[in-house]
Length: 230
Image 1 (tube, rainbow, N blue to C red):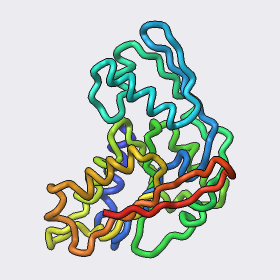
Image 2: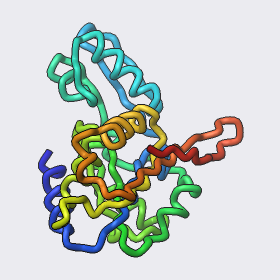
Image 3: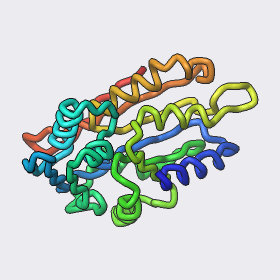
């Protein structure tokens, strides 16, 4: 949570910059495919090894429903209930495979824009992620990382829009480009940004959110982008 607050302070301090576009990238399965695993031991003694994001999300959702936990990211609540969740693989960038379709876009930094990585990983992963960007020749100094620390990405992006209010009363964020592989996160962003009546009065008249869903074709290990807009 401390890191998330520090990221917000940095974001707010940039309010006077002529930013009109936010480019927001997820990390896992968007910038890079990694071999990270999550190991879980439930209070009843049963264990599970979750080998990818889909398996992880499904397990967490099922456990949260079973335990009556109503949180977008239920990890902390489940740990309080006795679940032992080993996220150590996510404190590093393990065996990364660059997704060039996305990183080729990321390498170009348009004027009047800011580039962010918003990851559901915990804060101790930020350093390894930035180091990885440098390794693949993306200037990490031009990328702002945000670890959501359990907050939904839709809430984070909605807050980013609301923090950039100009004297006109409108946000100076006119365009958001969001690159993400998880349909769950995409649906959350669509709900919290596109369908959020509390943002309607501060969105510029030409505001647009363009989501690029990263889709992996497992038959040939290629990636494609599906465009989704409000």
